[in-house]
Image: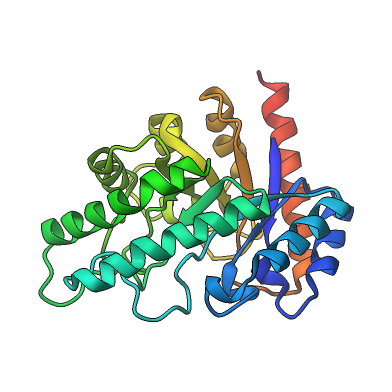
Length: 276
């Protein structure tokens, strides 16, 4: 089980301190939100990316990749009826993949609920066509860099486009590129009618990455979601990718969140191992 944590919960911390803290707690990797380094990816130079990679490596961490890909950007949208906006979005995804590659990462999680929201007057079918076009234009260059885009279903409370694992699979099949795969997010999967562990059993073979979080938007172990069945399902389906702790409520403090989440996930993993 390879465990990482997302850096944005350590808001205001120097990246070196984030990496030392995570490594000291026992994490294997760190997942990065680009907006924590620059307002747009073009403002994060290759030298600065190389420095961030060295900082993580010197602390004993791998950079998993990037998430919150389009957060805080302007003029980008996955399902816009404006072809220029879609073209800009495809180009930006390629720029992000270059950054991910420079950092040593291989995963880009496409969540970005606001930048995929179906706009007024855009039907589901039209939005699907626009999204397929946008990803198809970007994926050859992204795949050539050895980077995967993991499409993340999100709850209807967050967006009105791709709300279930089945929705994401439909989009993945339509894009039809081996480096365009499924993202499994526990918080989001909990909004479906099918139990999370069962969704994992159905879809883990298509998954490239996992986010561990409670439906209450806090870390694993900070709510009612039992992660033992979740880790058991991942183990049964031979998932060997990263599991990243991603939270949206940063209380009581990031170090406590990171420590208790790691302890809880390890506890659940030990329970799985004893029942193999």
